[in-house]
Image: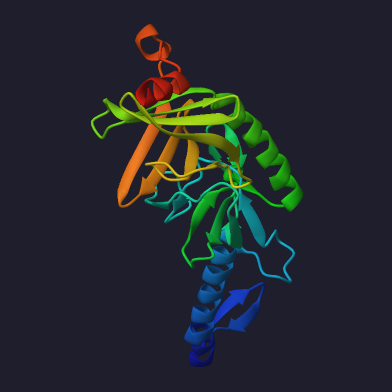
Length: 253
């Protein structure tokens, strides 16, 4: 049976293979804290993309017309806004692990717009080089050019068809209100994927075109009014329209 000295030593230390290891309360706390910090570092959720880190690109371009800026790197997070295709963004950080959305795996990136607004955007909506962006814009332009020809009707807030319509045909547009042609001219699709009309109309001179679901929509905002147009359904009552030029000539006669 040990004496008082042995009992004191046992109380102050651990016995391992016949050796005593002095342990204080402060040492134990420091060890636990170190384990917690190490665990947190191992499980960190994001990676900061510093200039010297080489962890990723510092600049990105919006490559999708369905890009959404969100408050957090998760698909159900609140939407901040919808950055336009072609917009240049500063990349601040990304998630450490990839997410999968609609069958596509990529990282979430926290970005800052020129306006200072920050948020998270999924990687499939971004391009990381001017060359990649230029190629993407070229393909998107062609897709829009193929979708534009035909009649586009205004959609009212309740989903009904409005009185305004715009027709795109042979690089020419015709804007009408009711049965009267109000203006016509040429148009072009810009590098930021907008429709620029050669002359002003009642819905403006520069129109946004974005994909909603499986089809495109045309958007315009002027004088605090918002307008939305969709392609005319392939039904006889919509497609059998009088030639816009003939309408104008009959009104002037």
